[in-house]
Length: 158
Image: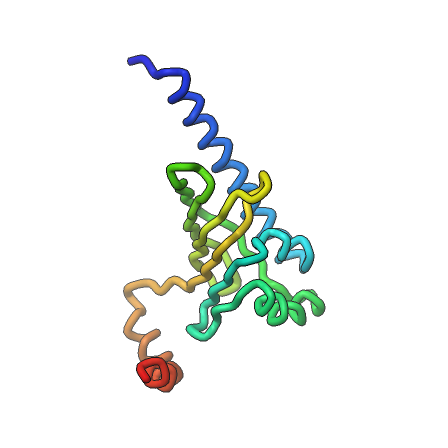
């Protein structure tokens, strides 16, 4: 079987870009663990969003920075380590999206998002942090959160 040079070249470029995004995401997590505010937030594009584990946590970059600043100032940030990561690309290679399982203080969480190549650097456009819930305990988790979230459900339905 013969592969054309351009196919091999495209595959190598894709692998190089996956490596660059993986390195960026790992460095993003290290910056949070070290409470390095400026470095952490420089990984976000100017127009970006962070969606947290609570249903009310949907922030643009400015709002997320304001929420996070006290945690960074007190050096009481989060320490996430990727356990498994998948990265996919748009046809033009300018956008990529990822999902990963993270080892966190909340046990396994899922990080997912969209990154864009801006001025030669991959930047986070959207980041979503979700807690995973093993199927065996879904009923217990739902029973625990139902009284807290019921008011929000009613508010959102209006």
